[in-house]
Length: 131
Length: 360
Image (cartoon, rainbow over all chains, first blue to last red; front, top):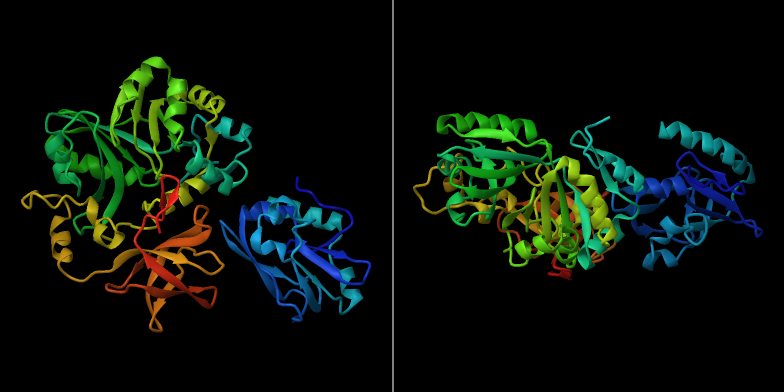
């Protein structure tokens, strides 16, 4: 069973969202997603200042196995990309919920956060996908 | 559930991620595919290749038969135990399979063919063998473990014991020797030194465990693919198939052209193609970020000139590499359509890396 931290919100496309104290959101991919992808070798983070809609593809993760789009979980403006991923993309495999975060964004509509999956709902989603 | 090798339970116990591979449940990796790749380039790793098919061909006319069956010339095999890599072609010159054939004695050759092509290979070989009275026997009771890497032979000798070390210390490259019940060949699919060991299936788990204790780490099919790609070795079904000749798959070097009077299946087509322009099989290196993938289109001068047949990330180079089949005459730089974006790649001659070092 993969790790699903209780303090995060999730998407069906396996992104996680952390709402920061400053009102921004940090986004990454889940432990389940990194395990499915296998060794990650390149990550293209979104450009800062990009305005994105919920479910819009905005980053690409390439593993030895496949290229995978990362979708914005909510609408907002990209405020940061994780610069460490350029030299060490494998940190997403090692610590997907920590130093392996992918980008930060502003939150255009706080109401959209309620549409994201809770840890319990995400765990059910993963269980249904795995079978 | 697919077919399982005698090592299935051992793989699961070693935390392998199992996948379907040509109808077999095989380990894709035991954790990190990239770490496994480096383990083989830098030290020693082992692969369960028991899904591959071992065939023994026996009869007084077996050499004459193989001279006709295979595109490479078995008359290159003069010493007992010597191995030869060859394509087996249909009448149109298309590749039915690629294989290794070992000369044992004048009435016995051994062949190792791919797992996914087992049924059609056996049907084809058996059909062709009839006219030569050669008996084709599948050795399903045997397993196969490949031990590869700069330290692979030393660690294998440690496990196989003093007697084996004596028998194997001076074994030549692409030679096999019998050690007790084991058939030990100095061959492989990684571009590193090492052995492919064919042994009774009942002994496979024991050898695997002993090799593990000697510091040989288990390696999955994922790393096997990046190792063979770096080493410039083709994969049947991706890089060539029955619709392609060896000349279109970078395998002209494996065709035994001499003597010109040797009649092998597919020869007429190859002889004609040899002197006319035909698609070329090349290596590609991407300097930008991204990973080259199978079936991506190769472009030059704004038009499509071919396709990637095997693409991946090279852990040794830290860049994406690929094999591609492209139009004749194109050299230098060309483009690859990667998810709608055209990135520039350099055309190179494989291998990309062997014996622990980059070659491009």
